[in-house]
Image (cartoon, rainbow, N blue to C red):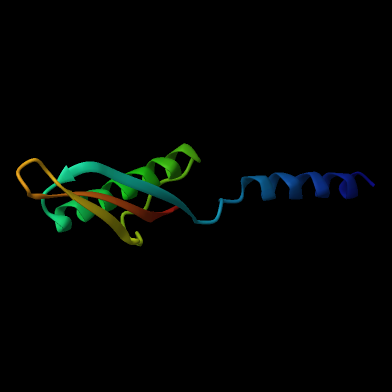
Length: 99
């Protein structure tokens, strides 16, 4: 009779100690009006988004993986500065795998 009561308790402890499956935590990056190069602007936005995703992973108790990050897309806007040069603002979403 005691063995029957003990086994469900042991099963609950084993299940609670099981590792959490890998997850993905999205992050977003916004450069603001910063760059004269659209490429540099998008690269900066993606880097910001990947950093935010890694921080979201760590905040959830996980460890960001260096491989398997999804770049995501970059959207951009432009305007002209006082001297007539194009100035860009970029936004991106990225996902870093988390374990």
